[in-house]
Image (cartoon, one colour):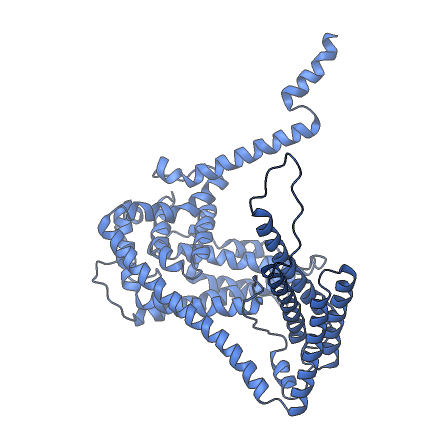
Length: 510
């Protein structure tokens, strides 16, 4: 008996059943992982002067480092006032540009539709009006069928069929056919609600059922809940109508219309910038092309704003270096709003160099994708990893100290390629030599990242997220200081470089 009781007791001790043990192991793993994340994020506060142990801790140490530097820097009221003033003005300017861009996009879309209607032929206009009239007639039938489920279903089907036929016949473009059907269904539901309100005001509304004995009296919430439910039902019906019409017209060409509209739709084929819209209380995000164009334009404006106000970021970066004990790399200057032409030239040269380094890796990535042809996204993943690697390198390069770091061996990709003699034949015989020559200019930052890849991966992630508008205005002054802080923790750095006694003559940072 004693031996029989041991197994359940042992199972209870280990977590019970196998599924219970699995849950316990999962909780333990989550707890340990969270401990690693928290330990890395809080390492700057707890232990200074050395990197945390473990890759996860180092990664999140790099992620959190700019925020710790910002917290220490902004503890000074004078620096905080300057920082808030600069970032507020930069953000306000960006938001004003974004608002103007959005309003121009919406007004342009409305003006475009007005111009299309203006150049529409009389025949096309008559056909459009007839199709719209037929859809409105089906909407009236739907309104009249309110309260009769069978008739309502029949009228709803007729409304959808009318809109689909108008789209397929070319009387209306597919998108307008779906919108017209949705608006008609919404107007029918609204008209039915108005009629119900009129009956209620005239005292013709049937009385609600009398409360049963012992039940609490109605406090008026039932009527309100009923009205909300009916409004929700009207929105659901209009949304269902639009979805059904769009599904039926999915294969119909967007240029299925008469007159000059065909040419206009052909111009938009393949790249449709559909702005966000609110229809019947539902917010539609719009197309990805719109958001790509929006954030691309905003990023360009943000870059111009930062370029003109770079002096103020330089002052904040210097204050951050002094506040955190890192020898400052930026000079003590009086900031002005200006365009620093030498900095702009160096910035463009570095961007061009980064682009060429990225492109130089494409032949190797294509070769690696050949045996991975069964995995369709192998090229996307490998090229993304290759691009992120160079983001790490140029994140480290934002500190001047990265350009003076000791280099003891070729970059890792040159070593890997050299170790594969089968790939050295024609036509890639001199590929590794050209790649090595191209990477010579950034050999020092590459060596820095190879010695501390995980912390710079975390810092690069923060830099990437912080580059999105308008976050760059807030994070940019602290990235170069964080990079200098990490380089100072590299044991391979010479003592003179750690103490800041030796600095490069040129401004390598951003």
